[in-house]
Image 1 (cartoon, rainbow, N blue to C red):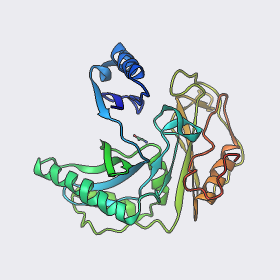
Image 2: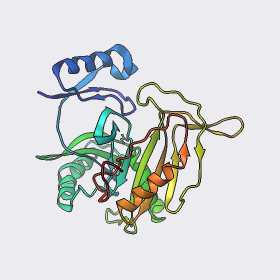
Image 3: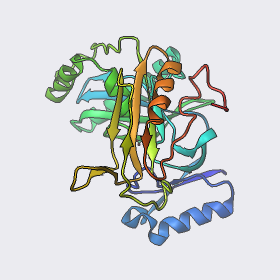
Image 4: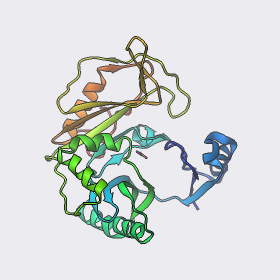
Length: 290
Ligand code: GLY
């Protein structure tokens, strides 16, 4: 049957292969066993290939109760039209309109609550974020992965939507004092993020290029550094595969991504690469010529 091949250990989001044939399947397994992911590739996992859009659902859990945070959708493939190798994430938006109220209810009943009940049953006192990586298949939502952290780049889209009460929510979560009825206020805004990468990512790439930033629209826009460093004389340099993310918020996704891409035109480093179609699912004005 169609299979997905995964390195069993941590692989920075790059350990998943989606082969199209038996031959590709063997090649993926071989490349993992040949040390590409170090000890993370000592074991491989073979899973049934399921199909459908992926969404990220985050909860803050205080050990017993939880609060649902805004949902998000990541873009894992390197190239436009969701082609090319898997990456750690090339862009995201929040919330994910794909998750209707009915679907979210089902996720809560079939996935979130049973997970947290099971943690309780096993006396695992987990306080923090639970990230449910889900696929919405024809037969309903399925879990692809759990993480005990936020998603990157989903986190960059969600954090700017939070108001100052979020700090108190984190405190209640850490102290085990959530009521579970807390409301998240996002002021009706939505958020989007595009990642700028080094040429060659997720494979080999060069670093050390100077990053030049021109005139940015800073109204509800942020830049998050990830693969950057400062030179001795204070110049911002590329220092990783995913170099930085541009994030903006506004009333709708067309406005959000217009600002994101306008700001990206103001950022330059040698070999800069980004997808132009992040958020295509939710941009009413999106056309492939954009
Ligand atoms: N965006 C995928 C992850 O953080 O694992």
